[in-house]
Image (cartoon, rainbow over all chains, first blue to last red; front, side):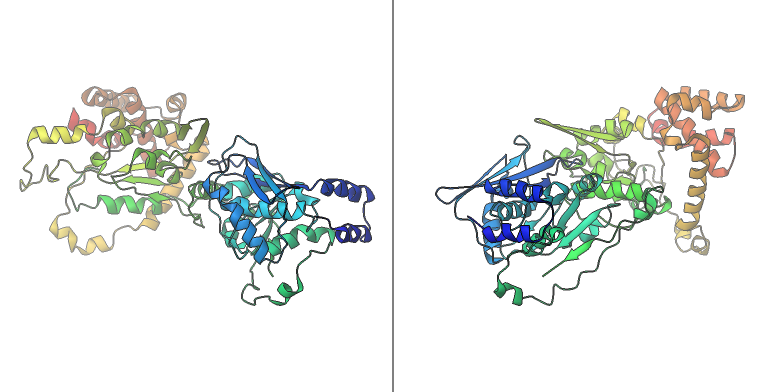
Length: 247
Length: 285
């Protein structure tokens, strides 16, 4: 899959030449890495979701001890991306959930896998992924579902100063985390936009879909963290309200 | 709590979270984390958890499952764990309570993974005095043989009873109290909660922790007794056959009674009250 337009758009925005070259080198290999976290009791070990697009017969392999629910995410991601108006890459897709010996459970890896596929196929730029964590279970229509067992992961991620991209249905839970940088999203297309937004890069979304925006999902009240004010007296008293995005 | 059916054991236990002060922000985040790890939607607000698992609960449901999910013990962290019909719980499930009651932590070891969940809860257990429930009834409604009663009480092991600091015997409410106007004017939970908060503050100022968490060395430091009180306690230890742990429990309880009364020192009637609250030791001795 080649996409010269995207690279030239990157150059047109100016900015760091070295970073552009670095990205070009990275995307040339059709490889991307997206961060997330696995649930493990009260701990939330980091999981690197690596996606590689190779040549060959169309195939979709998922490795790294995925349990039944995670294995089924292949089908959800494929449908969600296609109904979301993205081209699903036609080559050989390999997804590795690293570390390989940690069992992964739950539907939360759907969104990181989808974002990884888009980044590897250069539908979205893959630069800020080291500072972001993605969580989300996808429906076939591309909407994000509420996730269980998310709070320990959010606390761990925000402690490292990462930006957390999560379903807006988890807003109440996320509001408990002090000093969190949150981005609440309702569908896979919003999350791609939030991944690209910082660099002002265009996200390729078909025109047909852009006109089909639903009014019902427009309102999204930002949830202020309730307890941020009292938890750490020396730190700034309140974390910024989570940015919510929808179509 | 030991008492006949309908004496108000469950009602009393349910009122307990209301007597405790609200959780601090960090504590409620900790509780929310445990609820989230158990796959539940975290409750918001600073209310203390109140968990009352049914007596059919398995050991995995109480302690935590193989999927490294926190159990009822951890979900009751910083709140109240109420076990109604205490002797009906499976024996191994009750025995599994022992270590967490001491350490405040549940350690799960499953295959290659280990996991630790906090479980600093207040255990409240309720039981009937005998299988039929009416032992000691003034009208002689109990038909259990002495052996049946003994066997029923033996379902709760000695080490477990030893770890419970307060045993209360409840009796059925006399009929004249049911419709008494004086009951309507009795103290409500909010008023008691104020006294509890005051006593907790006294404890924090004195020793930076609650009486229940005092180590043996701190017990000797903060729960010193005068000579007559000490004689009273020694007599009680001999009479009831209290263990060293139970003795420390009585001392801490006496300290709490004094704190609630606003006394700087433990008086002999505080010790007497604390000893009085070991009803099961009295029954078994």
